[in-house]
Length: 235
Image (cartoon, rainbow, N blue to C red):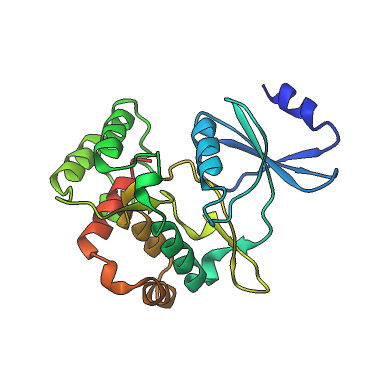
């Protein structure tokens, strides 16, 4: 598979990218024209579909150069991770959540994600050695029981990124504006707290308050934030 990919871009230098936890193999392609990124892995078809859907929505995403059912090559997005740009992150979250959910074909509601969590526990795919401190030492079955016990009664459905952390949002360091959104393989219709929980988990202290002020603190429910942090432990 990799040999076939490389044959399409023979004049590029392929460098493995070790950052990130997506489980995919990612390479930076340099030295012959614009910088590109190549990704292989089981979630590539889902990410390709979502990138295509997002194109034209006003959400900046990498342009697809080539793809098939096994791999995806995109143009690089210029920018730096949005760790120190909480207001830009909030602007992006508000824009994404304002997209008409009825037009989004990707389902990440709790019926879907809970079923997926059960499968991942059954198949031994949950990283029990990398849990939040409060869940340290828990088994997959105990996590699942807690997930089902604390499930919210209602969902505030919007279009969610699904893994909205600062590393997946790039900003232009000159303007402070969002230049690109990456790793969209979990995008879909879900409760807005699925995104907000992951952002606020990463943006500690004053950065979190700045994000909330820009996004709208009145839209946030603390219990649902905790629930969606727990849900993320399965992925």
